[in-house]
Length: 317
Image 1 (cartoon, rainbow, N blue to C red):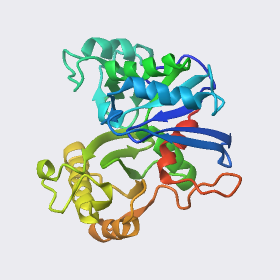
Image 2: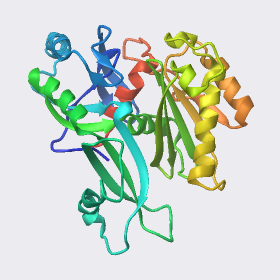
Image 3: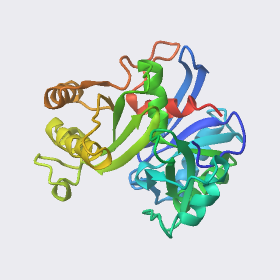
């Protein structure tokens, strides 16, 4: 479900608050990573997904594009989590699947309200409810995506696909766990002090919510939470997960469905304690997104910070 898609076989690049990462796969099955490179970004270059200092970002990209062998290439990237919305929405029986985009183009702003005043969106039919026609609507903020496009074009790259983090991580999780579809899978993605929760059922993304774990006062997290992600306690994360799991169970499913599998992604010093706390609190299966870290051919282990980029590289164009 790309937000836009024009060409094939792009290079895979993710631009996030902390770093720019590039991945090239040797093969998808088995999953072998041929190249994984990253360059750190100075503070306040990108803040909560919004490019603040485009000049610095362009300068850094110019320094690595040739080094990584992607000069003048088509590239795919991820829309920042804080500017992505996923919603399951009904549509009339007389609207055909190939008419969905036009139907929702009219409905957005009149009957469907999004948190962005300039949305760009994609929509696909969803066959979960036999009694009514529904679709999965994925939207992002066009002006934010334009920022990323402009930066990539400034270094003579050609942005052709904007994907979203939850779909990238689900592709990677599916490679590992081979979900049959009946599961209700929650992916808890931790990076830069943020917790992005996404939930999948029958391989459809049904829910997504980014939570700033550093804003303890606003979220009523009873924990000593500081801006340093290492000080975010397992208990504070479990409390946020419980809120979102309850919302999914009772608000979206009227109590008839609950999370069966919970996968955690990210570099977190208290990961084993967190997984134990999740299993104890919810009595469900909880694991790392990848059971074992991926390796390059030289045996170097890749940190979990690369998982979003690798999942994006798994995208079938």
